Length: 297
Length: 278
Image (cartoon, rainbow over all chains, first blue to last red; front, side, top):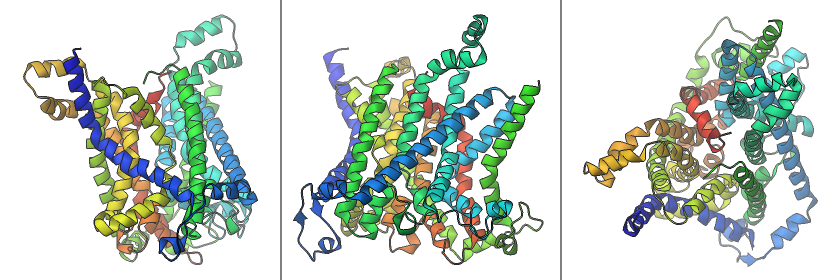
């Protein structure tokens, strides 16, 4: 390639990327910068309306949060909730992917169609449907179990469990379909060779299939971690904005409530920054794992 | 094959459980009200009616919210396709410095918790309202802007593979035939990546269509500009829930996505798993 052509390429590339660059800088880059700025100030309703001067706090919000037991409770709940969701999604998705390889196409297609319907249900609609299924007075689940009048969202851990079940319901299909495709991509000869060498089903699964699926497993795991760490809609709708007295808060909802319900935008932004940093760390791990699988960018 | 019969029975049972919530939604939507608000709901109905749909569309003005959601999602789809197509072409067809860095940044940007950005974006849209009301708070334009930005990185990422699959020789042949770069781009490459454009637009559509958080944050006092997810929340009143209408509304919200999803499911899976050719 000549230098002139390369320069032409560079110019054209710049022109083609300009709209994307402007949009992302304006609507993601700048807000991200603003988020950090807001977190450094005492920024509440009075400051917004101009009734009080802006006060620079520096890292004040951060030290306040990191020494606040409430923050650590919410943090722990976020990690625990995401952990349960990730584990449930992976186990359920992987088990069904294996099951799908053992049945004839009609049964597999039935399962995939059902999974697609769960996957595609908008989070708002899905949360509402689950709420109704588990409704205290009119819910079908209580009717079947014969416990009319029982509230599934009153107890803190039961409420978390219900939301987690809903999240797993709509996120396991991604894992199942991806892993199914991965298993299918393993050449039959490899498994036959293992069988010829005298490996049993469990040995084959552990020593042949699992290592081959490793890259895929890493991707679905980290994707799930990132998604489940950020769950907002389900918690917000199913627990009515974070549960009774905020018992069911996770970081995302906590940040939102601090900002828009308590009008403490500075504090909300601080929690937002903490979340962003945590996800950035997870993402860097993701990129490293991806590079190790040898996928060229 | 006794083992297979057992496996198939289990598979179908699980499929039934997984699909049950959606079945319950549809069923409740067509049940007469007396069969919905009861302590002994039955998993079937002998007298289906469309009353709940009528209530949803007339009393609750759901048609309006449906159109609002549709408007936002379609504008986002068209704009993000055009912008993402250009970017994907640049990232696959041209060699230039910083290309790999840009690709990594695209991946990183997808992980930013957009929920955290509601706070600065809220104030931004508040200022925008003073300059260009149609793109500020309480107007659908504000939703178009943020969803355009949030769906772009993934759209570019996904389109990249489809653009790369078009042979470079084709471009050389077109250039030899005297086609300008512009003509090649829009008259040859654009139609060729149509399957990728379809898959990408479906994802952008769903992304904008499903949004609850930004609609809730930006459309604060303009009821006429609400979108579906928020309208659905309006029904949920603590004391007396009209579950029939809520489920009818959920159905109206879910059906378009369901249809799109089934149409592109194979490409969708390929696109999502694209980053990991095992």
